[in-house]
Image (cartoon, rainbow, N blue to C red; front, side):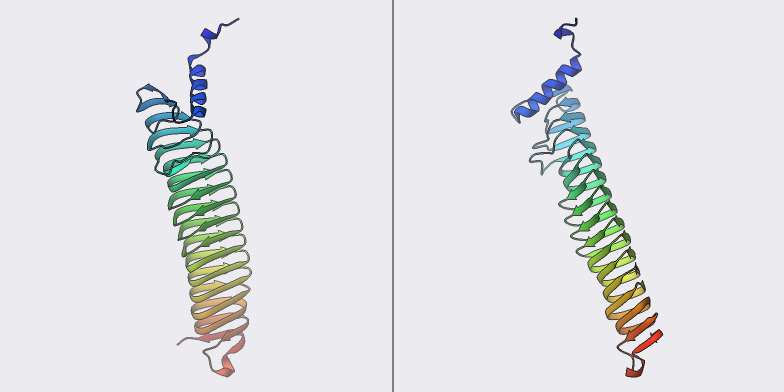
Length: 278
């Protein structure tokens, strides 16, 4: 029978590191060959190399591979570069590189690839590729690719390529290619190509707006295709729908019934085709 002294050193050190992590910040991490680089077991605030910790707290800067078992504590000022993997959720101030979380990923800013089983949450800005099993939420701007099982939402702009199972929403603008099973909405504008299963709404549409249901905007420049298109302001371009409504038409309407309120009274409501090219 093997004696305890013959246990592998790595297993003993790992158990010690986990216990120290439970104790808290007062327990010193174990690092080899240096306290600043190599292999670290425990909550070291600054490290380069492979770092394994139960729960990050008060981290300042990590470069390399960071593995955690639990969601971080107070980690708002941290900057973690490289590969971050969390059984629950890696997170902190700024994540740069690849961040993977069994439940999710949460940070103030994310640059690179971030994927979470349930979702990805960003308190500031994100640039790169974000993938959330249920959804993605960004307080400010998303630049790059965002894919959410249910949806993608940003308080500022969504720029690049976005896919939402149900919806995509932006407080300011959606720019690029946006695809949603249900709805796409933007407070200021949609620019590029936006396709939604049931509903598309914004202040200004520039480009191509496509939905099987209702398209509503203040101004449209480009092409709109839907069952119902309502332009509350000025339309410059072409709309194709069963019902087309425009307050100021400077283009073409094709549909079962078309209304251009700036046309003479006898030409405001027309079947099949209505136009105003001046």
